[in-house]
Image (tube, rainbow, N blue to C red; front, side, top):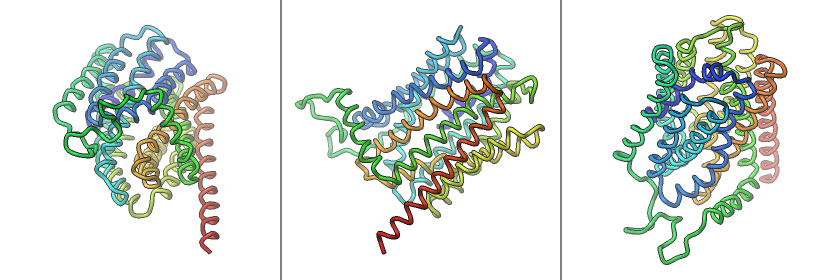
Amino acid sequence: MLLVGSCVGMITPIMPYIVENLELSTQEFGYVISAFGLAKLIGNIPSAILVERHGRKPYLVYSLLAVGAGTAGIGFAGGLEELVCCRLAIGFGVASLSTAATLSITDMSTNNNRASTMAPVMAAFAAGTALGPAVGGMLADSLGLETTFSLVGGAFLANAVLNGAFLRETQSRRGEGSRFVDEKNESEEVETIRNAFNNAVGQWKPLMRNPKVRNAIILNSCYWISLSGSQMTLLPLLLTNPEGFAMTAASLGKVYAAMSAVQVVGSQPLAALTDRIGKRPIILAGSGLVGASILALTQCTTIETAAFALGTWSVGGVFLSTAPIAYVSDLVEESERAQAIALLRTMGDVGLLIGATCTGALADLTSIEGAMGASGGFLCTATMWYAIRNSMLMTTNKKKED
């Protein structure tokens, strides 16, 4: 995950210059971001099915090959269509990678230590994303965009080789020599992906009947609407705007590196705090911090004030890095966990798809600052809704007990 985070981080400060070179509008850049979310949205359910059927390790290898190919292709994209295709390839790869990695961690953890167990993995990813932007910005300034994207794509390929050589399978087996739990014997009829897809979606209905699961999933979707619109689409454009902060690729890389460094430092202690005081308060605190920070950033006129807003934004992101997955995992049975996580991720990707597209269009109609403020206000509203709904739920449960 350290290498994956580094490669992802390298791309972040370069994307605004791809937009500039291809002369894309903010709305078209939103389409590029949304393509990633669309691919993840489509890929989440098949990924959950295939990872349960064939095990975690194969998809910790194959997914990186898809991500590497898509990343290398971005450097050679000649227009919006090619850029979208590359982002689709990356999205499908990330869907498999995130599903396999998350389930590997849940395989090795319990309800009492799940957030703490996930934290080192998230910290490794965050450490990579802290190192990556600075390196990516310097490489882009010195070597050019095409060479930088080719190097990052090659790094994903090398990571896939390392995973294939050194990772071990974590999924439990029914017995010696048997297949994984959800795979049928050769004598049985092989279940089609379409049937498995329908069965998986069918499992979502009872999951959504649980109000705690439903509320967490809705808030997570709202978080991704806000995050994709603000951090993924508008923030790099805001910071590199010649009429604003006018940052270079290297400077933008340092900003993202600092944000990721906060996640590295804070992930383990905040994960321990999450396990101690509960996931739900942490989710509320994280969402509130991120929403307020986005609103504050729109009022910043100096680097110093912007740095403070981005710092609190990063702290909120640390709160939300493991708490939603750990919370939903705690609420369901082990047999439902894969689909519960798939549902959480899928609805998050719906948010990513909606947020990037709508926020990009809103920025073209108004301004980057106006669209950023709308994104922060939306998340603050969603956080208040979640707090009210959970308060009502706790009151109802208390009355039933009495």
